Each structure stands twice: as C-alpha cells, then as structure tokens.
Image (cartoon, rainbow, N blue to C red; front, side, top):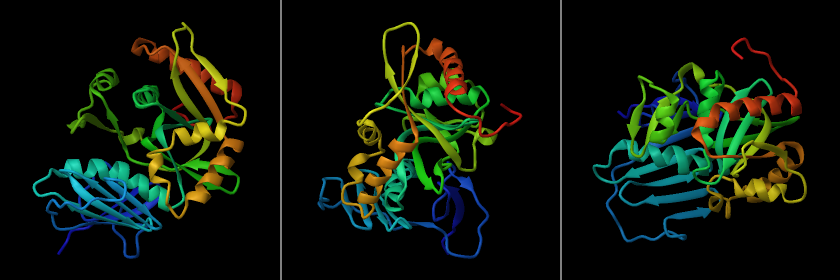
Length: 308
C-alpha cells in the first residue's frame, strides 16, 4: 500500500506519495484534496521530444521532461504525476516538483505567479522581484533576521480577492546560495541540497495569506544611497509580466486570457516600486531600515503584531 502524506502550500491541501519536508505538514483527513502528487514507476530514457523541447503546454495539461531527473505531468491544476529516472535522488525530483511543476499548477489554477520572495509586514505582504541574481532571497532573508516572517521564496502566488489581492503562503523554507547562507547565520536544521542551502523557517514562516502591499523590482546602481520610486505609466503591466515565474509556461494555458486581465488589475490596484541600490552585502541592514522608513511613509498599517 502506498504511503500518503498530507501537506499545505499556496492555500492548497496536498496529498503526496513522496515525502516533501519543504512543505508544511497537514493532518491527513478523509476527503478530496485540492492537489494530489502521484509517484509512478521509474521511467526509462526515450527519444520522445515535447513540443518545446523539454516542456509542453496544452489546455489543462502541462508536461516537463528534465533529463536525468524525471518526467512530470500536471492535469487541471489538481493532479501531478511523476516518473523519476532510475536511481535518481528524490532531492532532485523535489527540486523541480516544487519549482517549475508547482508554477504550472498555479497557472492552471488561475493564480498569478511572480518570480520573487515575499515577507509578511505590518503594512501587508511585500514582494521582491528582479533579474536572476538580483538578491531577492538574500534581501528577504535579511528581513527574516529582523523579525519578519517568510511568505514565499522563489515563487510568489498572487490571488485576487473581493477587495484587492493577497499573497498565498508557499514553502516553509529558503534556498540560499553559500554567501547568503553564511550571512544568514548558523541554522542547525539547514542542509545543502543540490546547489543551495535549504533553511527551514519554523516560527519565521507565515502560514496564512496576507494582503498585497507592494511589488518591489530590485535593480543596481552605483550611487551611495538607495532609491524608492513608485512606478507609474503604461508600462506597469509589462514590468509585471517581465517578472512572472517561467513566463513561457503561460502561453497555451486555459487561464492565459484571465491571467493577462489579472495582470492589468494588479498593475492598476497594487503598488509597483523600483528599488535601486548598490549590490553590497555589508549594506543590507541599512537597506532594510531604508525600506521600513519608505513603507511607513507610503503605506498604511494593516496589523500590529507584538513581534514587530
């Protein structure tokens, strides 16, 4: 009999046939989960080529083939099937499951997935996006050290509500490169996994959704002081689309038109901020203080929590 473990991520109840320590555990209850993860028999290598080389997007169906790791199939945002390659470590299987594959699930379910990290603050959820290596996780980790809580790292799901937008809690861990992990400080439960250190958040993880306050685009400049600039104008939608998670996974989805309209609503209603600063790890603490001051000036407190 296959062992099933229950988890929660992105507001979804998940029943999985493989252990996923990166996810928040959930009591296994009778009833239909939002998402099931099936682990199939190991697949042999074939010459099959998907429509886009390594992935394929059809209405209600997403397929991904990661050479040397596994084949993945996502159906209707509610079922994931995994065929691992023979003898592949499950850490590698989970790496793509919780990244690219979960991104496809979010697209199919009509959420707007941004490539960034998000923290809970008294002003609402703050997201940090930017180019690869822009320091999104590193900055979010500095906020965690300051006493804030993590909502999501790498994939941030924006969900519409009746009066705005909210960020859904995702995985209860950070993935940090060696330099960022060293600055974060020693964590007894951390482990090195494939290419980065996995740092569990424990009580520093926010398990509930939080109203969206602002999306920050991180960029570099050579000036001494950081800048905080509200982005206005007609290119706001394009700036959002540039920071989608795996944007090529959107084309061909049944939800594509709905998500394009949702991008327009987010651009109209949510704050989009350009944050430019020097890329200097020694100035991270100062950058956190700078952003806190800017948030106090531009946004309204939505909650007062003792730990803040």
